[in-house]
Amino acid sequence: MDLADVWAPFGLHLRTPRLTLRVVRDEDLPHLAAAVADGIHDPAVMPFRTPWTDRAPAVAPTLLAQYHWSLRARFAPEDWELAFAVLHDGVPIGTQHLAAQRFAELRSVETGSWLARRFHGHGFGTEMRAAVLIFALDHLAAEWATSAAAEWNASSNGVSRALGYRENGVDRIVTRPGVVENMVRLRVSAQDFVRPSWRLETAGVEAIRDYLWGSESPTAPRS
Image (tube, rainbow, N blue to C red; front, side):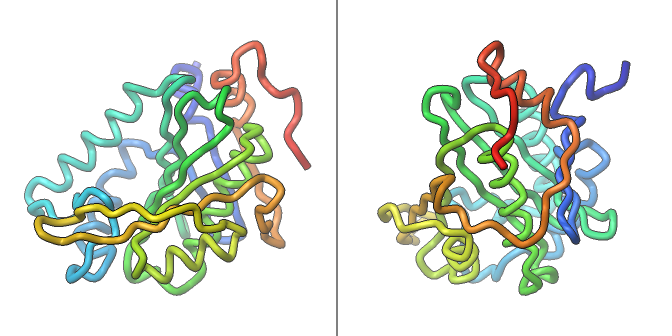
């Protein structure tokens, strides 16, 4: 018996032409903390609903680890979030998240991500988002995927629109004390998803699908 037999997400791998996505392991945390310390966005703006990148460098690595450990602790079919470490040439360069609540009923997932700033502009954001969308829509039988980004965040909104998302409203939120932003909500259906030209390679999908669906697990992925 290995660790994936104890906690199924550790057996899950998604592979694109340039990236490997695996659920964050403890050995990934130092690399992810270093990427955050190096910078993942212009510090003059805040792209996230919660300004977690503003935390003091001395405590940020601990908070990062605690967050990922908390996801493992509360992973359940009715409320789950998978945080994938995104590896390029074997090194974590960011994370791609996929989450859902009451998934079996709503058939909807939500995505979020961050990428080390020096890897921006190479198409990795689109590639890693497409990977989890294929996983969710084809292998987990999701019907919808949602995302959100600040109105000014042209790169994130561009990724969404390139993959077939459509605008689904705007939220007005406070990202930093005294800073109010418009957060654009976006949604894509399984039918409208714009698929990449490459094929996703997967491992460990069946165990996750069976855990989330139980006896109602889909018998085969969409093609």
